[in-house]
Image (cartoon, rainbow, N blue to C red):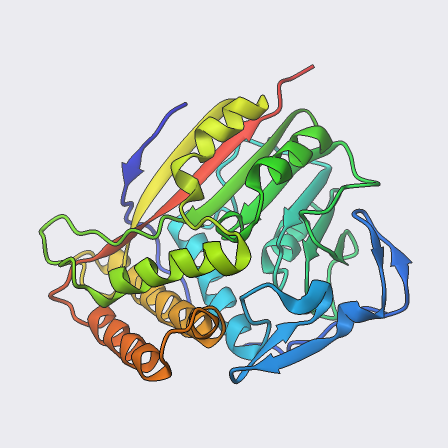
Length: 331
């Protein structure tokens, strides 16, 4: 296993286009999927705390699936492409993968762009919500289901991809075991996620920073009410090795929160990330913090303080973004 913590100056890119309509092609009639059997409930949504959430599987996922969330996810997608110089992943999957699965695909941008990159491949995105666009490449399809369910018809994937998903799973070990079972020999898995530990190299981030307080509240709330572990990245490489993966690699990018960096490209990335982080705080403040019993006025103060701190160029905070990839042993 290899680890590397860096910040890379990369090329500029345009801001994302205006968000498209959040909608779906899915027929709510019952159908058989890669994971299980779907019913009409897959298309249902509920509104709580001023945000829209999926209703499938009792609607227990804490991230909204509305237009605001689409804008956040689209900006995050643009940011990560900018970070990787236009690349969509770091795993060495080769030039001709033929079967790719995007687990927790969200609005499907990653799956669609990978499908366009590899027109001969079959790319499948899986998510709890039918929120992907109407028009997609012919080699891309989307499934509404829970990736923590059994995979009853899936096998022989060249590449399995997670993006900002694993810290919101109940059982990473079991989910990654299923990935290992359903990869081809020599196939790859990649996990991309944030380590929620704000830091700075010049001590401008104090222990009282409101984003640190936010994570100190959010972590226990997600454990108690959802069974999630937002610090899964601590143990992810060793977990992959324990399950039988080989060639486990990790690359860590220290992503600026805000436009404080001297380098123009890092300022661009920091501006993207400030918006992503502030919008994520707003999303988490809507359901998880309310359900954890945090006072609404305290939540409002916390959101305001984080927004102000993320815009303060005297605070040189960053959050680590981890890319971890591993291979199923070749036959």
